[in-house]
Structure formats: C-alpha cells, structure tokens
Image (tube, rainbow, N blue to C red; front, side):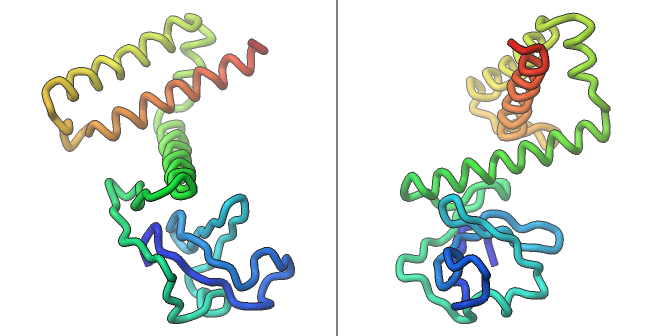
Length: 170
C-alpha cells in the first residue's frame, strides 16, 4: 500500500455508519498502522487488521498513480487531494518538530523568551537565505539539508513563532 491509494471500508464494520461502505484515501503510513481519510472523517487501522475493515480487491473507479516526493506527497488532481497533501505535510512538520525537540530541547522557545522575537526573525531569515541560495543556484541542496528540508524547517520556525505569540496573548 502507498500513500494516495484508495480503499473501500466494509459494510457494517464501524459503529458510526458514516464510515461504512465508503471510499477512503491512505494519508499516512505509521510504524504499525495505516491512516485513512475522507473529508473530515479519518481512522487508523493496525497493519495486522486491514482485512477486517477493508474490502479486499477493491478497485477504485478513478484510481490515480501516486507520485511520491520525499515520501510526503501524492498525486494532486483536485482540491480534496491537495487538502490531503497539506495534512500529510503538517503531520510531517509535527514529526520533525517532535524529533528536533527531543534532540535540542526547547531551544527556540528559550531563545525567544530570552532575546525576544529577533531570535525568531534571525532563524527564519537564515532559513530564507538558504532557500534563496538553493533556488537561485538551481540546487536541491545536499544530503545534509535538501531544499524540501529547508522549506519544512522554515515552516516549523513560523509555527513555533506563532506558538510563542499565542503564549504571550498577541
């Protein structure tokens, strides 16, 4: 199974009838589960329980071949799929945020509290300069930091800045 694959849920398997006998899209593959979505509805299925919840051999009417880029994105044909891609990117941002906080602690929040918003501006500016350099050179970056990594890090810096502003009540 790949991100973007379409599946159909079995009839009468969920207590909430909105989930039964409907087509869902695979949004994310977690360590031991698959995350499926359809509009505002979503559910997780443990990898060992797929056949209990999904119709086996289901062929969607308008299947699209996924087009993964760095494991994040699926083929985009309409707004609904872009919403799925956006959700997938936001999930990736959260994973990165969690990993970096485990590694570095809350160094960003501490810097903002100590030096003010100028410390946030400095980090965002550094990332923007890196983005600008890579784009103008026509480069995808290095194994250490790709253009996509730079975009995701920059987005996280803006989100962390928003979190600091919310904490301050601004």
